[in-house]
Length: 65
Image (cartoon, rainbow, N blue to C red; front, side):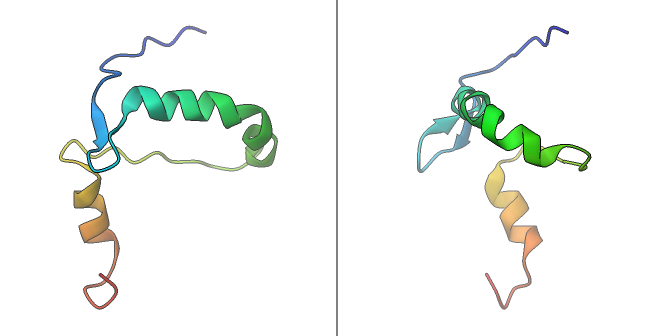
């Protein structure tokens, strides 16, 4: 299976300057250790076109933010 990766320079975390390419490289690096624990488990990667802050703002009750 071939997956075409695009927009690898897209910033995911501006403060830390992590890009989509950085995240993919990290997943590739830890995959041999992580994948065995994910077998038979559902996983979700939530996309947020407006940035990770939008997810964080809606993920937690106001009292916790």
